[in-house]
Length: 472
Ligand code: ADP
Ligand code: ASP
Ligand code: MG
Image 1 (tube, protein in one colour):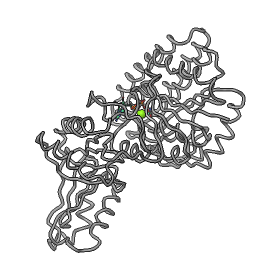
Image 2 (spheres, helix red, strand yellow):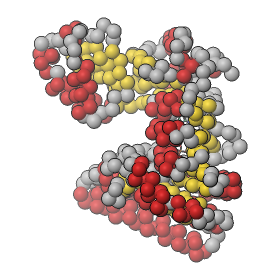
Image 3 (cartoon, protein in one colour):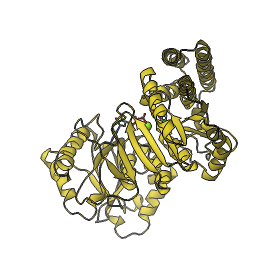
Image 4 (cartoon, protein in one colour):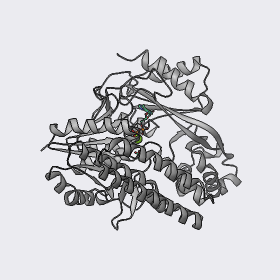
C-alpha cells in the first residue's frame, strides 16, 4: 500500500492559474499511488487579512473588516468563476464562500462589540480561509474527473488547547484518521484537507501556528503511514538563502533534518519548524518542491547529515529582536543567577532565541522578540532586586533593532575555519558583530548584528562563504 501526502501552500493555491497547476500535479500523481492525500492552505494573503479584520474590530474599528469581507469575496468568486464550468457546482461553491465570509463578518462584529479577541476566537476566525479553499480545490478536482472531497482537519487532527500554537495529540489523531479518513481512501476518494487547523478533544477549533499547513501535512503523513510527504511552494526547494534577499541563492538538493530544523527555526520560512520531526522520525521521505516548476526535483530532507567538511549550506535571519543584557562583576562565580534569569524570562512567556554568555561570566545576553522586552526587563528587575541593590549586578538593559543571522551546515562540525571565514567576510564589509553563539549540534553559528546591516551581511556571507568556498 503506497500513500503520498501533498501540501500546497498559499501561493500554490492563490489564484485560478495556481489552482489549475496544483490540480494538475494531483491528477498526475493519483495513478502512481494507492492513496493520494491533499492538504491545502488558504489563498495567499487570506490568513493575514482575516487576522487583520479581527484585530481591527477588537480595537474598535467597525469598518475595516467589512472591506476585507468584500475583497475576499471578490478574490474567491473570481477563482470559482474561472475554475468551475458546471453552473450548479459553481452556484453551490459561491454560496459556500458567502457562508464562510458571513461567518467571518459575524465573528468580527462580536469581537467589535466585546472589544477583544481571545486566542480561541482568533483560531476559529483565522482558519476560515483554509475551509473555503479546500472546498474550491475538491470541487475543481471533481470536475477534472477525480472522486474528491473536502474535509476539515477538525475531524482528523486532535490537538491540545494551546490556541494559536496547538500541539497534536498523535494517538487520538491516529484514531480519528482511522475513523474519518481511511474509509474515504478505501473508496478511492482523494481527500482535500484544510491545513493549519485542528480541534481539541471537545471539538473546539485550534491552529498549529502561522505557516502551520506544513505541519498539518507532516502530522497526517505520520498518522497515515505515508511513504512520502511533498511540500509544494513557490520556490525550487529550500534555497541557500531567502531568494527575496539574495537573488543568487541556489537550491540545496539534500538537507538533513537537523540542518533544515536550524534553518526553519532561524527564519527560513519555507518550512514550518515542527514539520520535520514526525516525518523524519518515521523515516518518511520529505520533499520541498515548486508548484510552478514541478519537474525540478526540489530539496530532499533526510535523517542523517551528509558529511561534506567545511561546507555551509544556508544562511538565514530573524528580525524584530532585541538583546537583553544582565551584567555585573558580582555575578562571577555566583551559582544560580543564570537559572533565575531564565526563570524570570520564562515567567513572561517570552521565547529566548539565543543565549550568549561572556567567558568572564560578567554578562548574560538573551535575544528575545522586541515586543516582550518591557515585560522581561520588569520581571528580571523584580527577580534580581537584591543583587541590583548590592551592586552584584550593575544593570539590566536592552538593545533594540537587532537580528540573528544563522549559518547552517553539518559540515561545519569539527571543521576549523568556518567561523573565521564568516567573520572576515563581515569584517571586509565593515559589519560589526554584537554577539555570537554556536548551536550545540555544531551545525550552525548564529551572530547578532544591527538590523540595518542584515541584508548586506546575508549577501556578503552568502557570496564569500557559501558560493565561493563550498564544494560544488
Ligand atoms: P507557502 O505559502 O507555500 O507555505 P511560504 O511563503 O510559507 O510559502 O514559504 C515560501 C517562501 O519562503 C518563499 O517564497 C521564500 O520567499 C521564503 N524563504 C525564506 N527563506 C527561504 C529559503 N532559505 N529557501 C526557500 N525559500 C525561502
Ligand atoms: N494559512 C496559514 C498561514 O498563513 C497556514 C499556512 O499557510 O501554512 O499561516
Ligand atoms: Mg508556508
